[in-house]
Length: 201
Image (tube, rainbow, N blue to C red):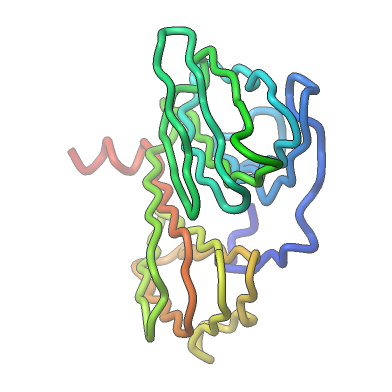
């Protein structure tokens, strides 16, 4: 990942096959950008019922961003339906789970992180007026705009956000404030390195 804060437009996401080959995903970012990533963001395109890929040692959170719903059946008997507009679920990457479409294809925002490397939190929020985010060494914010449009303060030096874009807010020296204003709704993901968290305990 770049050390500077930046925006990735939706049309620059990389489309690739699922790990198990049963579907497609648009990868937003992986950090670092190799197979040993610590965390990853993508948007899964689910066009048919299919088993999910297995990711041992990884936790994940799935958010419905388009479509009429996705039913997740786990082999332990659990069954959870992600309902519109933005149903979500956190589960383990090693869980044996099968996805079933409720009524037509879905697009699902997919946050994955290695539980021994980072801690991740995902928040779904309306954007009305101004929201503040604070980045610092060891803490990154990813802001995915679900709907609407938004702009950062001129001092932040970042381009506007349009529906589907994702901003990454970092700071290598001390705590830095970012101000985002506009209208719509977003997913805000806070990623904290485990080394930083352990040092503060």
